[in-house]
Figure 1 (cartoon, rainbow over the protein chains, first blue to last red):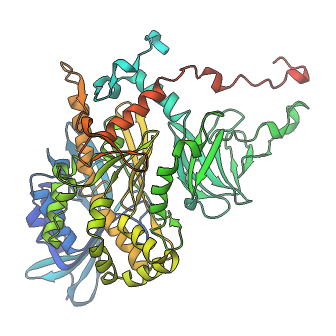
Figure 2 (figure 1 turned 60 degrees about the vertical axis):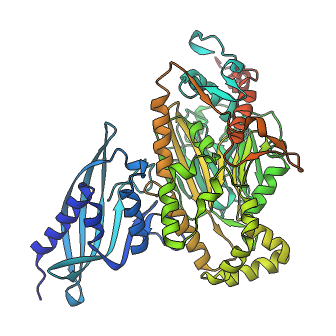
Figure 3 (figure 1 turned 90 degrees about the vertical axis):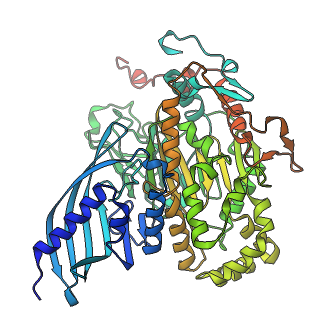
Length: 157
Length: 447
């Protein structure tokens, strides 16, 4: 079956919008049960078993992250970040059974407490067909500034 | 002081049970802190295990001064000022790496990794007065080490590192390190680097604050309770038998051993059920004997501030880096244990990440508190911060340290007592900065 590029792009754009709008539950629902969400620290290619990550989470940890953000007591998101991001440079690799690996770049602007910041990076998604759309089984975010000082990055990236 | 400001008498601003907000907002006070606390006293620089091989280096800071911690060809750790002795170009541009020499790109001078000047380009134009041995990279005047923890002092005189730390601090360091069955930490697992827009002292005070966790970190405790049924809020209730402890010289800790001892059977039963846990427990017993191994595992490390900039909490080494009076950077180095199964170290990292780092579910809420603090300080009708909690109930423990209940502000009071002591010392640092070098006079130059 040929990969429908438009279909995949729509999925990434929807995910971006849900993150931008802090739509926590809807974003969590995009993930498969055997999820891995990974944001390496200090470098793009590290061994997560012996090097610290900014985020290295399975579905359980991801659920905890969302429960916390929704609780009203996650002060790092009180007030919440205002976010808008652009997803581009999308490249798609076909796998078996309709699974795809998608490479994309993002440019994200965040505003919080009158301070505006920019984040940028490359994202690697592994997506599996699910119902009429996809589920995320793996997402790795390579931040341009993953070896720099980063203040409060508790919004979704 | 500079700018014609009258020198402050810190007795007017730091009382036994409260502190004046100006101590967090005044740029002149901040400059004096750099001079007296960071650029004179003992400051934590790094861990020798970050640079295990000859030539390995780390660029870092003491206070706001750029330095290089490097292991030279003979295996010795050196603390070098990151500044060419010619015209002050920084000789090291990257945070970490391995090199046999540092080369100044400006005019091509080269220095061996022990700091010695190796080569000077077009040497002939200097004349006979120029001796290479006079122009090695300057060293941090004093360096000291305890079990791999490297400290530096930019003052050539002062108390020894041994006197600065004292026995109670060394005992806590031992508990942190001896969680490794080989008695050695692996500090090559990377760094969480975060920053916040508030004064550096908020981070050290809060690191030793047993009153805030149940409020600032309730989301964290709620998740743990949801997953495991464990109610950890009891550790930080006013009914808890956990302690705040003053270890002397501004070094303080939260002491969880009372709670952990009551629950030590749980630790002993749980550990072997975790991946690699049985093997780890056996290695600890083989190394330390059953009784001491149990003591170490029950303590589970430490929760301590070594004044002014080093904190040990959980699995990590935390370094506080002041940037300006209202801007701070914090580096967290999660440690691995040598001699344990890989799964044990992976679990240390996963546990650390759940709370710490720029996207973590705990420390980020602390940073938010610090920034709210700095905003609050702008409202000055009543400028005081109250540190009186448990003030009347401090008591002397059998080992000579002073203790309070875990929610008491004993730790903050002890930090401020040391702060005032250091800040009230003679302010004449000019003599320490060194006289201009006499270079060419002996050769009859113009000087």
